[in-house]
Image (tube, rainbow, N blue to C red; front, side):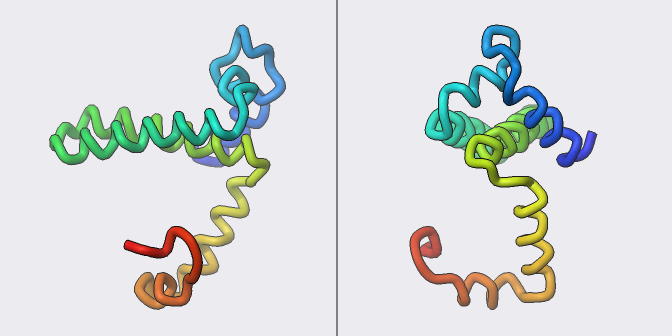
Length: 108
């Protein structure tokens, strides 16, 4: 399964019955809940990365990707837009790109 495939599944389930679909239930809870769940999964992935448990990190990384796509869906941000932004950055060094950004979230 590709990220595009997963994003399409999430989009298809967005209008499903929240009683029968975890994705629909999460999306019906609103963008804030989707962001909260993404944050929880990201922290769990960090913990497993620090512990060095490859299997657990793999599982948590899958959760992070899924919940990132759910969060994007909750705010109507297509994965294609994120990929286009990554493509735009490809021809620029990471250090130059970071230096060019201004505003919230740029501090290390």
